[in-house]
Length: 118
Image 1 (cartoon, one colour):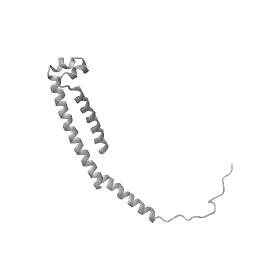
Image 2 (cartoon, rainbow, N blue to C red):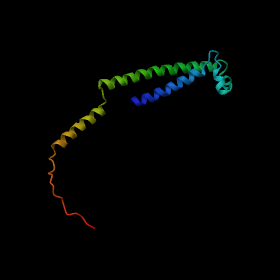
Image 3 (cartoon, helix red, strand yellow):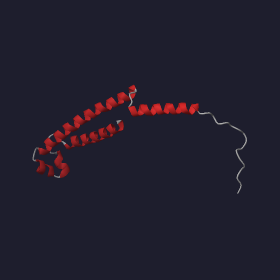
């Protein structure tokens, strides 16, 4: 889960950087990227509104994702694990106990059989 959230975090960060850099104080920076098409499609202030709303949405997603990542790290440090991980640990302990209960094979210095010659 942590890796998935980190990948989403990087994608949101890159998107946020791109949207912020596309803006200008006059609202005409998007025109430089797409050759004036944005103003024709979105209207004179449409590009500026669109970029502002996109920035707000990405900023909220960024903050929410930061909080989720913080909870994931807290759970990892306190030792809170999922049921699947606990089950795997339990099975590993049981396997170790079973291996200890098996009798050891006798060891001898003599070869087990005649060597095979071709």
